Length: 38
Image 1 (tube, one colour):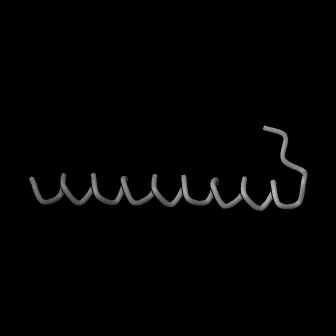
Image 2 (image 1 turned 120 degrees about the vertical axis):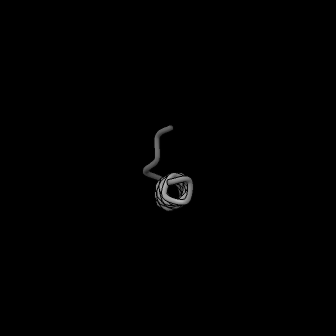
């Protein structure tokens, strides 16, 4: 049971990291193109 809980926490953390990384890259590319407004 503990292993399952740990796995869920890790996979959720990985998804959050991917989500954040995606948005950082998106914001960065938008700034490079000059179409990013805050």
